[in-house]
Image (tube, rainbow, N blue to C red):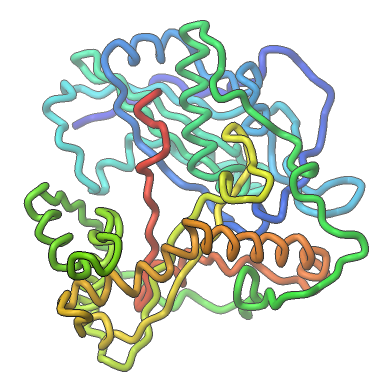
Length: 392
C-alpha cells in the first residue's frame, strides 16, 4: 500500500483570542508525559462529513489543542499556553481500496496512517499538542489517525473531542459541552499540607540520566488478539467463584486475568518474581462532587496490585489458575469501582490535592512511567469500552 502525503498545515481557531495560560492540574502532572496515537475508521457517511469539515480546535471549545506546552510566565510552572499556533492536519491518499487493507494489523506499515512528526528540532515545548492525518482510500474510505499529548487530556477527553468534531461538521450542538477551568476543580491547599506519602505512589524521584538500556536490535512485538464469545464464556466459568458465593467475574476482569497469566508465562518469570498489572481508572464520576463528563483535562489515576508470579497459577475456591489471577486483578479493580473503591479514590484525591506543592518543590516526576508500566515484569491495561468513539 502506497500512501502519498497531499498537504500538511496548521489548523488554527477561527476567531483570534488573547493569549491565555491553562495551568496543569494535579491529575495532568501525575500522568504520562508523552503523546498517544489512535486510529479511527469512521463509517462512509461520517467520512464524507469529516472531510468536508476540517478540525478547528478553537471553534469546538477545545482551544488547548491549538496551543503549546511551556512555562507559566507568572509561576514558572509547566502549563498549556493558548498561543493558537494550531493543531497539525495532514491529508494523504492511499492507492488501494480500504477492503484491501483490512483487517488492520499492528504492523510498521500502520504507522504511516498517523501524522509524521513535524521535525522542528526545537524540542517538545515547540511541538503541536495534536496532529491529525486524514488518509483517503481509493474507494472513498477514510482513516483518521490522531496523535495527542497525554498532559493535555486523557482518552475520555480525546474521545469527546472527536465526537465534537463530528458534531460540528453536522452543525449539531456539542454534547457533552466542553468544561475547562482546571484550577477551579483541583485547587491545592495554600500553604501545602502533606498528609500522605506521595513518593513511589503518584510521584517518584527522577532517575539519573543514563544511556539506553535496550539493544538497538531489540524488536517490540505487537500482537492483536480476538477472543470469541465461547472462549470468553469458558474463561468466566473458570474464573468465577462457586454459585452463591459472590458476584461473577466481569468480561474485562476475566480477559485481563487471562492475558496477565499468559504474558507472565511468556516472559519466563520465576515463581518469586513480583508482577503488577496497572489499570487506568477514570475518576470523573467517582469524586464526592463529580467532575462533568465534558471536563477537558486528565482525570485518570493508575491503580495496581503486585502479585508474585506463582500466585497467578494457584487456584482459589476451586476456580483454577485463571480464578486466582482474576481474584488478584479484581482486588485492584474494586479499588476503582463501587462504594469502597470510591472512598479509596477520594483518599487518593485528597493526597494529591494536599501535597502537589511539596511534590513540585522536591522536583518529583510522575510515577506513571510507560517504560516501567509496560516492560517486564509489569503490564498496563487500558479499557476503551466506555469511550464514545462510535459516536464520532
